[in-house]
Length: 416
Image (tube, rainbow, N blue to C red; front, side, top):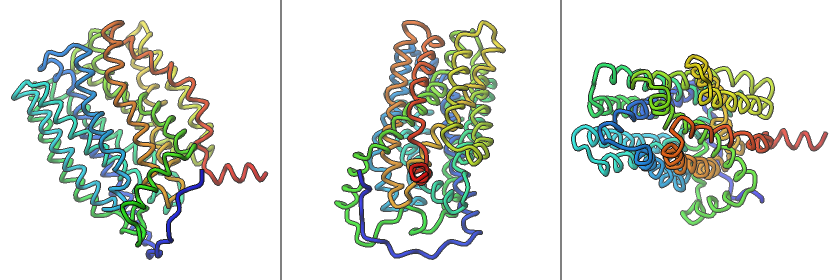
């Protein structure tokens, strides 16, 4: 399927090297603060479960609310980024994140209402989903202008934010800080920092999100629909779906699974989740060097293998320390799938926004189906055993890895 066409855009002045570096730093801060918000929420899931007295199945349904919000945002997030630009989209979306996090936290501690927390999570997911698309598009634009792989390091910033969120959550649980007070404070920090970071983004017209001068709403919708008919985009989306499930299963259930399946305290469960995120952070930091040296296909094949081994050890190991090593390997192996998938979707700068949006919609389906699937399995076999679904899904995903090879590399290989 050929790429959608549009009339050429008048070229914008090339940004200075300093402007690109400032944008790089701003994108890194955005990713980090988004990770802080998400990590803070997931680290307090056990406390919310206790406050609302939820079974594994009911908890899965509650977590589904966040995924529903994200999926509501995804189909239009690319078009929104095209219309408003990455900076404004990120700022508005993070405002919604802050509101959602506040409502969910206060709903758990002040009302004890399942419905109120669910509404907050829908808003949280919606804002996070829209922000995700816009910051990945901006990150891909910065990566192209730097001329080297850097997207995994942006996602490493997200992981570092998650580590900080998990650590703060463990400390909050240890000292009995109310979920509401904790999450409101996080919401204020995340919103303030993101507003400041977005001011450093690349100018409109060089950030891959600016509309052509003659673009109409109908033209933008046609471009979006055309992206849904591109085989490579759809296959990348399928790969990202499994990568998102691999990461999301740990985000949603790892702390709860180790609390239930290995008799850990709430604080220790949050610490295990932090080990997973540390593994992801190391993988995303070191992975940029590996990707530039060996390429996407061999590196992703290796990391998927690590994730299979790690998730298997985390569930099946008879020794607690060995299981924690498995968690670290799981995090290391899960580290590159999502960011490299987003980079692959944005390989063609002219259509980056709509293609990233399509891939994000497909990928975030994992967050829609994952929580209830694992929750229902958890009711039958236990939450820890339910996580064996992760390695079973990863193994066939190895067949999809070659589609992430950059198009120019495919062309060169064909010519040779």
